[in-house]
Image (cartoon, rainbow, N blue to C red; front, side, top):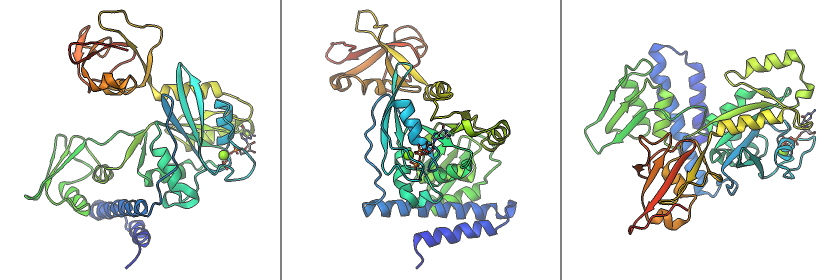
Length: 372
Ligand SMILES: Nc1nc2c(ncn2[C@@H]2O[C@H](COP(=O)(O)OP(=O)(O)OP(=O)(O)O)[C@@H](O)[C@H]2O)c(=O)[nH]1
Ligand SMILES: [Mg+2]
């Protein structure tokens, strides 16, 4: 029996050979689903063997940014410039053999930046420690792609990430799958499906061993969207892109690179000379969408001086995670003033999504209230 690797390769070959049209789209969807399923299996096995566990990188600070690029594009030089961490840099590939963290202080936030080994083609299949690197990328909050004039094949980087289940600048598809024990598969949708028909959806689900239950489309999803939801282990990360060594790049090359990386808006920098790093830092801060939360003790005044910094989209439970554990353990409710509140002092629960500059009082059980 062929190895998982060989099975995947031959399925990929079959997709390449099959012309894409309406008649073959169902078949291709099934092949893609089988590949995705085999990849999941491969991952499970390598974990079982103790492989693919990834580097142990302790997250710290308010957010973590992963520097992703081919070897020698200047990742280590950039880390040193941004954070002062001493990551080795040299004029040959694979100088970085492990992941080096540094801390960037910007806009009142501490941002952990991770320098990692350059990705090579085939990284998602394990080449050049690729799987370990990609597992660290998965746990980051933002990807900073770094390319240079000699390594402009940014699509190749994206493909490695895609193959590792990392979705860049995309959101989780609005497809809900509820498996059942019997009764077959029912597909329903709240919008008209133009990119995938019911029959194809059922076939794809079967490839993942889902034979009974409901699939509800809340958007006009593609076969890839459905596969992502079935695989279940996808991560959705924001990303920005910088072009390093701009000191060596003339205007013609710049516009060529701009075209190549669309829809990304590249930031041209030179890590070695520090050129344009302010703009890059601004872009990082913007992409992380920090919010400031002011705590207010019950009956007291809000501390307007030292906000707690959280990621955009954070909930009350994320705020609690940053406060003394007894507050979380005895949490009863939170009172919120500000943009996320429907009215001043609204009572909310752990799931409530906070907004920038909200004022929050944490109410704990046993009639005791506290905020700090
Ligand atoms: N001209 C120019 N050279 C740079 C710049 N930034 C880095 N370099 C050079 O590019 C080479 C590689 O830099 P590194 O920082 O080691 O690259 P890396 O991406 O960390 O490489 P790996 O760890 O092997 O993946 C070094 O010789 C740097 O001096 C820059 O802005 N301009
Ligand atoms: Mg390096």
